[in-house]
Image: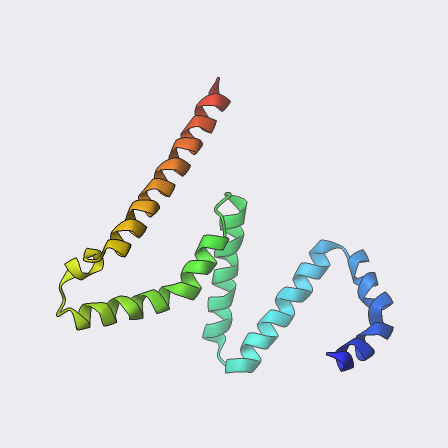
Length: 132
């Protein structure tokens, strides 16, 4: 960490000058280096096309107001949740009631339903007040 500080301190004015670059050029440069990095990591054009498709999807989500954070959380935690569900089903001989068999799971499901109901109510209230 100290070495990084020593190396980057002389370059601080240079890093500050990066803020003067127009966003269009900055985004194009970042996209170019990202493509180089993906291709260098796997030497596969399929991965580059996949990266570009995900970039277009992310752009469309941002353009139409779809939040990106839940998608990122789902991508990161989804495989872990699937593995845990599969293990739970294997341990219970595929009995789905094992997912609601303890008081703590029932409490967590209840809290989840309450939070979803409150957020839906607030959203509907804001929508109706905006229409008036």
